[in-house]
Image (cartoon, rainbow, N blue to C red; front, side, top):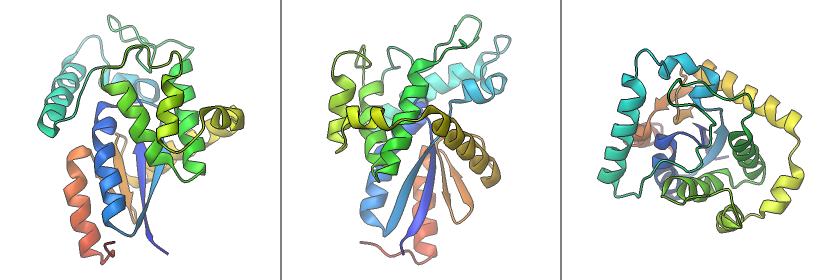
Length: 214
């Protein structure tokens, strides 16, 4: 049986978007199963941790740094329109109804159940974060899903929101148990690796642990 890496990942996280090419390459290079574990964005899990109207340094830095990181990696980058999280950026208040992030997270869970979670995350994150306006309109999401080898209509028909909420809560609990709170966090044999810039450290650990290369 191959080793497993659990990836705690959010469709609203720019760093989650930036890590997806690395995750595909990791899977191609090593005998590992890379499992997508969608979690809700920090704005919904613990808003005051990052989004504090009295102190805006954290969100400002994230926006600046993620754009810089994308430029360094040579990846297109623009904040999604519409934003996956309905949030007032003047007050940082989040809306009670969050149709986009719940839909995306549910689809990610269904994609992982079919063994193509990381593929789905890669193609849908590219749709969201590479400057496509109205990613939720027309057939754009369906086409991105097809690129991942999946059918959007089939995924949506299989969604049971009660099960989705339970799975997301389980992912939150697993992330907490691994000793972290942020995304992306990759967990290998109980050890967390937080951030897109920890991929090389994770590769080092895989080599050190004797995980076979393909």
